Image 1 (spheres, rainbow over the protein chains, first blue to last red):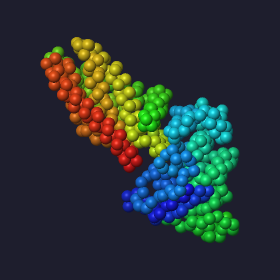
Image 2 (tube, each protein chain N blue to C red):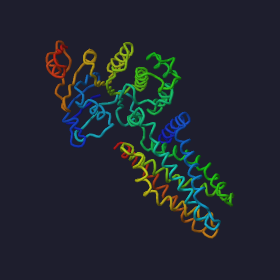
Image 3 (cartoon, one colour):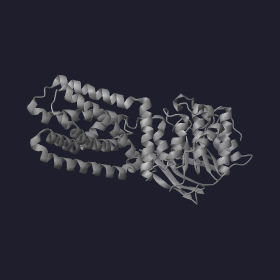
Image 4 (cartoon, helix red, strand yellow):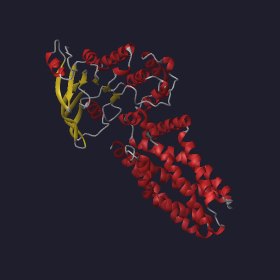
Length: 237
Length: 225
């Protein structure tokens, strides 16, 4: 599967949040999306999953979906660390609701296995609203483990997770791309994101200023990213 | 078939959340009852004016109560951005429209089941045997209200002052439904106009079918814009 984005632009009134964004990604790509606040990262993620309408440009998925073609569009997922879950449903109810919504048979054993993987098996009957942000992020992780999207986008996933949560997340993402998925992760935790990714994109004021496959050493990245560091700090990949 | 399956799944979720939160139904019920008491202390219903005034007063209460429910309709989807989670899924948007309309219809019908007999008691009205027919007509009017209300609620979802905006856009569009319902109820309550009630009833059914069909067809444009 290939994701081809051509001249993608988004304007909010007279302000360009994203302008002429081009990228081609293939199955197995794990991309770090970097840039300062207001660079257009979240806008790009929301455009890619179709949550907001583009002003111009195109987003195309080429090739067959790695999932059985149950649905007419490639399955995309957006992992927002503490969002997209119902507070007044229990953890199990949330997962079973979303499984059914995506057309899966609601298998309680599958849900329990996913919860066990994110170390939340004993919290299955608790309301999501009673969980901490880190635990909610783990529930979201379990959700996307069950749904196995072709394209998974993540918005600042590291902020709320503890050490073991980060391990779980990174293992899941590696596994997803090894099985043919594409992952794009927007993050300000640059060192973590770079360790995990195979490619980095840097946005600045809505424009893509850097798009390279990872290598070691990576002086071009160091130069491009250096300008976003706090004064006096240095960066080396 | 898939549309009905998705609709029932979403409706189950909304009902479960309402049972646990109890905010919409209780608020609507108390507000509806409160309005009846306000009417009771403000008006006298002379026996010769009952057929004219009772349906209008009842529908005034239903309209305000229903609008209160509509402002809460997408509240659970606003919290934690769960509407985004629904829109990300391969869900048929028509199912979301149907589920929300059915959910609101269920809440309003429950309130109406309590408010209508209470109205009869408070105003000491005769003709209890007419209540089932009046309730059926009210139900048809409520279908129109809920279908159109769900659409308008979705349109104003991202508006800043949505609670203020919703009645402003909804009430003018509701006029045909309210008019047909009230005239139909008047016809049932005054024996002389029973014949006219039939034509208002057909009009009401027509509105319900049109609003429902249009709603299912265009809801994806409304909710994704």
